[in-house]
Length: 143
Image (tube, rainbow, N blue to C red; front, side, top):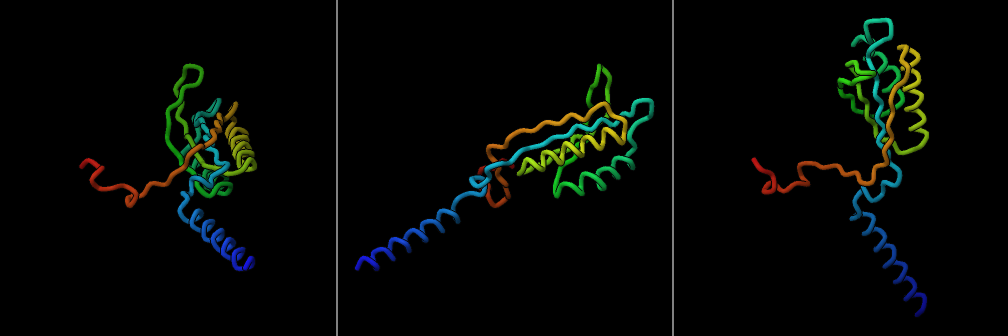
């Protein structure tokens, strides 16, 4: 009798855990996710600047080889009162070693293109949700 009761408790527990894991949003599992942004200036001291070809080469040979996914935005920054074309690269990472990789990418760029520095920001992500068209009711979207 005790064996049957214990088996029911175990079976109930297994079903409960499975249901919780199936119906719990992915964002609840994200324990350590950071947004890392690197701000790459495109001006070269004593030179014209980083060309599009040079940037694309750095992007594919260095950034893309270190990170599976990232976003690149053209930007206009200001440094010491002067305008400077720049690229802002944003990536979501899940480990401290990925943050260290980003630092190495920034240091590589600074060395290759004679930059004084590359600005880097790291922010903890508290909530991450992927929104698709099926998650929004059509009546709630204004046309």
